[in-house]
Image 1 (cartoon, rainbow, N blue to C red):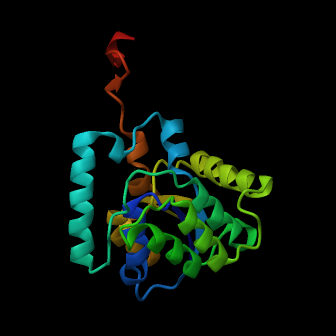
Image 2: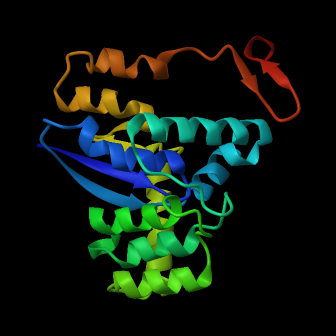
Length: 222
């Protein structure tokens, strides 16, 4: 049996769809899952990226695409009252609700549904209080231990090469995005394609040009 670590942040609609679709996409495979809360903002800051919702034309496309995917996959979805929002309280609650900082699937489902299934403000204080009472976390979400655990989760994910959510890690291999679920399913079935030669080819493609904030620098000129 292979083990999957599912890195998520509830701010991501793709992470929500991937969470809902995971059992369907991997049906017939033998696997276990650990749900690892991290902060997408921490990944973006580390890699010097903007989130999809921070680029206006990409934001419009992302939201259209998400709604279409939700319909195609028959997954209930309503955007929160505002997006993006600050997911810090929800991610800390995820950490605080699980043994060793890893919540179970029922808890993660409740957190995703809090954000993506009602059209309400995801960071509303009164709603967060109700959610806190419902989940009855084993730790105080605002305790130093929980805050440090969420940060260390994010730092560990970055160290492994995680750059966005959802990301699935299996045996040191990373699969990114909702669209990676068929690829992940193939790996769980021991598909012959996943040899070292095929898997590592991307890392060995030479870089011909490197983009910098103020200029494009040709490696040949270095």
